[in-house]
Amino acid sequence: MSETPADQTPEALPDRLSTDPKSPFYNEKLLERGVGVLFKGVEKTNVHEYCVSEGWVRLVAGNALDRKGNPITIKLSGKVEVFLKQQG
Image (cartoon, rainbow, N blue to C red; front, top):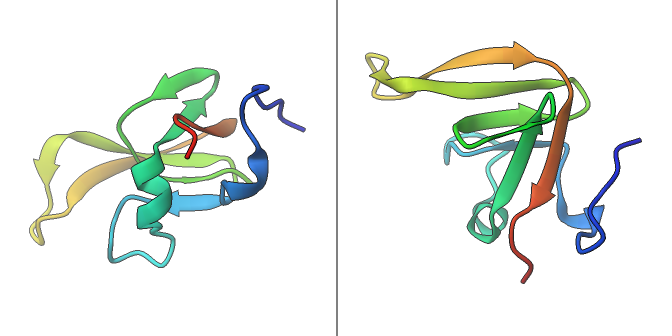
């Protein structure tokens, strides 16, 4: 079981979240609040999508885009922890 900081409640954090508005895992209100992702104990700022239960993140690979204009991502496996950056 992952530990949560004292000022955070885990009820609002989904198991899977995406920054792509076309994805069924997109949640605009939650993203506006600010979600932080720790991958293998290091905070990542270029996360495109994550899944805590399956233990993976998709990271944006630079400024490269595919032919449909979507960012190119890299899927990495490991321990994933999420937290809210700001309350409200």
